[in-house]
Each structure stands twice: as C-alpha cells, then as structure tokens.
Image (spheres, rainbow, N blue to C red):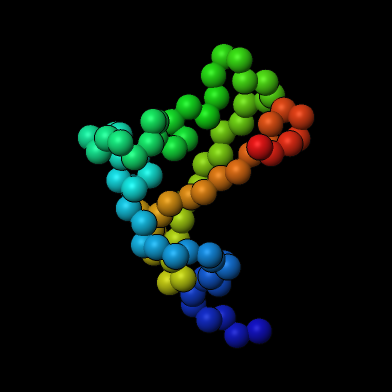
Length: 83
C-alpha cells in the first residue's frame, strides 16, 4: 500500500468557523446571551458517576497541530441517559 504522507481526515459537521466568544460570552464580558457560559459547570459535588479525564491533541490533514479547535462532547448521566 502506498504511503500518502498525510493523515486521513475524520467526518465533520462543521458549519463554522466558530470563535470562543460565541461559546463563552460572559467570560468575554458580553452579557445577555446566556445566563451562564456553556459547559461552565459540568459537574459538582452532587453529580453521580465515575470521574474521568480525557486528553488529546488535534491535528489537521497534513499532521500540523491545530491550536484553535473546538471539541463538542456529549456525556450520559450516571444512569446512562442523555437529557
């Protein structure tokens, strides 16, 4: 098999580009968009379930590090259900 010298891209549903101020307006001193920024409090002392840490790096198709990527995550609750 021939080596192509680049990474295969993963499927995307990107409609962006998005910038962080659209996701965290309160943090950027833009009030009135959301009561609180999205994802600001994912867990607290009453949250049930096992805690995990997810780490990684994002690369483009040429293998260069992407420094401004936005990762969307979804997580089931401790009963395995989504809101």
